[in-house]
Image (cartoon, rainbow, N blue to C red; front, side, top):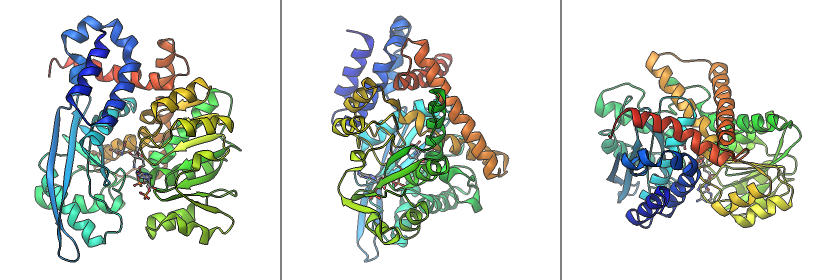
Length: 444
Ligand code: NDP
Ligand code: 2IT
């Protein structure tokens, strides 16, 4: 049996009931076959793939908090510190009832390669909790965040592990967590990114993930002699990534006609109104059912459906496994030319295969959404030098990073005879830097 297959089998055996983690590891290791085959003896001797697929450390803890009625609740907190070969652990905190260890491990594993692709010195990690922020009062959110950080603060620091936002964790949650970290550790340091602008946050971090998705998509289209100008776009999600993907796509001359949340989706034939979406989601924290009151010409539908609309470009920006084979078939039959993943692992493996076989340009999340964590690393730099850069400075660095990510993954795919396969290109290019660092640092 090949080394890759042996390790895959072992990962599945040793991590039962973690299908998302299996899926992420399988996709990466499958892509790495040509690289592993060329170095099999050394990799086996050094147990390289076993070390790569086993987190350096995983922390699981109790998070007790009291609601507004005086009732106590207990949630579970996680931080998976996956790989620190190229820098301090870096990755977001997800607050969603679906969170479990397997989800955090899949996200932490993906983060290793994504962070490597940014070209910046950050290792891979992820954390979160099964706490559901929906419908909670500000005081309840604060109570949870303080309790969560009371435990997490023992394991993180500006030079060891730097968490950030993800699903359910935005500026409000980061603020409460930062306050508690500072109170307990007595350190005003860049231990979290995505902070508010008045206490060490970076301009353009809020926009970075969504903007980055469009910068890399534009660069890819440019290399094919095409552009975003005049394209019709479907976006899923209505959170941080989706909102700023819609905004940048619109600025670049495309028309975004859909967005969604966990209960339904919107079709706006005139193009999504970003100001209305921000008001509904960022200010009022309401459901998408409200969108129609701002845009009477739009349609609201319950359930799933954004991929049924005829578009040129699809940007899944909500959650994992939200674009399945049937969705891919609808997109292809409607003439889609490109799919770029704003979310982490939103496209199922059979859907990716179908899109690629159908000649659709497919940019995987670990490349397409790397602008968020890249800008987090820029926030860390600003914190270290105790300065704040302008929006234009950060945005232009972000753009350069995304253009470089595209060329790195494009070159890696070509080098291994898989031109245009950006999944393989991203996994190989991300892996090469990490493996170099792991080899140089010995068996640790
Ligand atoms: P938000 O919490 O801001 O928004 C998430 C959006 O997706 C909401 O509209 C939410 O709807 C919807 N959603 C979440 N879970 C589900 C679900 N199970 N089914 C259907 N819809 C769902 O999160 P972000 O925008 O920050 O994150 C979106 C994706 O992007 C995630 O995969 C995240 O890991 C990834 N990502 C985020 C980065 C960042 O910087 N924030 C960076 C790189 C990747 P509802 O509100 O109804 O739950
Ligand atoms: O998935 C991701 O890359 C993020 N949620 C952002 C992580 C970060 O550290 O900014």
